[in-house]
Image (tube, rainbow over all chains, first blue to last red; front, side, top):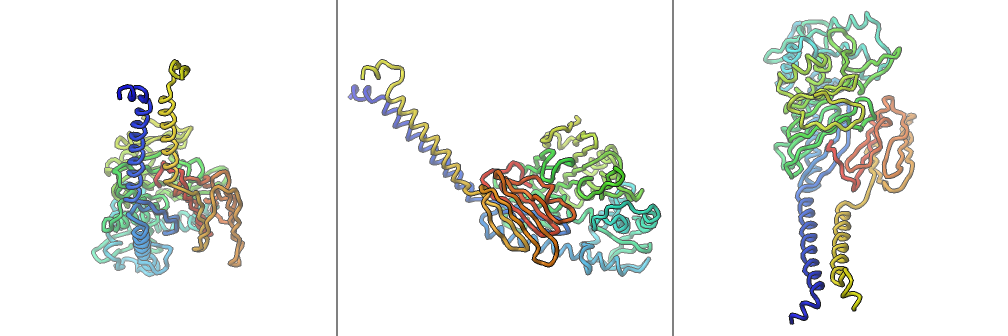
Length: 357
Length: 126
């Protein structure tokens, strides 16, 4: 017997090793399968609010994902009926077309809630942000891909109708104190949509979701593993889809980016982008090329990314931190400034940039 | 047998080596099973067509609505990109080639959506 063991020592070792490895592989694969069965992702591409809408939903099965996907579309659709200037009979469009100077124009509580926040941030930033910038946007033909700098007097005329002090919110509606004014949720609407979708998702069974609406991204829940989401930030000087870096973030955050690369044209060697300074009437020109804001409020993250882009590096960085949000500022010299809370959460991925400590 | 007995490598050792190799191969194959197939989903006006990401090809989407709108999609080297398009913003053409699971390229003005479903796992969630 001992001789038998001695003779087949290696063979027996081999059999034991095989059984051991086999068991490991079997359970390893099984665990993988189980995890995959628990949560699976489904991606939906489409359009909303005049921009690309991409939804990746992590749910138990595809039926659940499909159902929630439809709920999200409905949710954004009904928000657009309130605040979109692209819909002729939205609340905002009707207000802009029909309001009487100094009269109360009735708006729904939801719209008024958001308008109040816009006015507050407008005041706090000394007008770097305006909820009634529409007449200026029209002169620059931003929506129509305009590629000519407007005449100075046209800009001056438009600016007369862009004055946040002339917007007054009362309990039942809004009072506009000037002529030819127009409210515009263009720089806050995508963030607001993220807020409303996040509320909706809380009432569903989905485990997690990443919803991109133009420059605003909602990271909701998790993938079933409690790990951070990895949100890529567009490289402002590279192709669409190339990232300058990745933010690792917990769920229930909204990440909004404003940059000079989104909509722009060049005239006489100068870049004219779509982020207009309500004070000058011209595109903000302070050396920033991209601002990303991370906040648990979508409207804040969307508005702050625009406001900070206009305010400039120093004032913007200060203000965004006062509001309890985190941010990434990128300058034309390709220097990247990150707020303290994001320092360990931001990974630089592109060449040619410098992360300023 | 004398040779085996005196050499450094014993019969059983060879067996163990082979078995470990077999186990490793099995692991690789089973990991590969997880996500089979690499596909490109192209949606035009709500109609979806599926192409293999492995076969190089050009896809021309022409105008059937009386306008001059067009999109030319190229699948090459396991990636898909918009080669040219009639849209005014050219955002889709400027988009980098897509090859990873869940990546999309969208031509907003022409309502053309390209989505990749591949085994190449993404490191970015948005």
